[in-house]
Length: 368
Image (cartoon, rainbow, N blue to C red; front, side, top):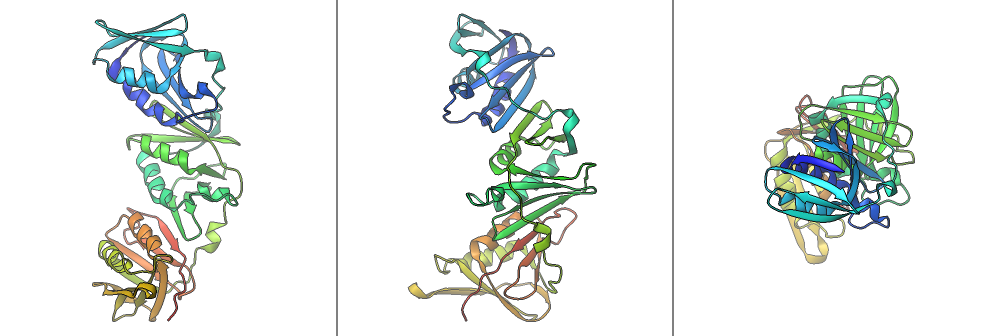
């Protein structure tokens, strides 16, 4: 292979592609970058067999080669900011920057596995990068980290409907639903592995659109000169819309930051195993309290500035779950909708236009 390219442009593309390189693989070829000449551009492919990143950048190039990813990136990053040439011969590549060079071994390109990436005919939706990033920011924290019995919960549901698309994640204690007003002509549900979603999220630059393509087993996100694809998770996601309550008539509106600070302070005295915190709410008071009887710890705090319409209620939550929900919401004020101490609560940003997410929290029972 022969390549002539600016070292900084190459380093930028490699730094993005490296996100898909596994730390260690049973297939050593997956620890390499596949470099190819396509349409007079240099294409870099990296894959761990489940997530694949393909980057394209301008270069004078021809041919194909595979090189150890981390070694190649480390060399290119320290090259001077000039055009460099890379040539391959006798199972090695020479990286030349004019007044110096480096040699790195190459690997048989025919050993690189064929990567399945949905094509343009599998187009699903097109949305702005900043919208996709917001959807992932609101759902990734709610994904179940490890559930061998319910693997679908370890991913994010993309529920593409005729007139909208919902991104949904849940760990059975908290659920986040982030809707976007973009539908598709072929409604379907796809579960994106959370690791792939995190990789995609870190690569988004908020400028331009993302085209989402999907076939029966794979989903791809295309933006700029980058395509990131992954295998979708099998299994059925819970019927999330059926558990979202519609009759929570008790409504509190609080400053999100103030409420977070109160919950954080009071939770220091919560039982370490349950993390239980109680909210006592009426039109006169909004109080947070926690106790750990085993260590004779207790804390209580009145949250100022809360407006409440409804009947008095006392409800318990895991403090870490409540803090997570408040941390996800981006608006200044948060709306808390309650039914009673046993049924799910809803947290909604007051500025729904800027932040349209809905968070569902399951309460816990706390002894009197």
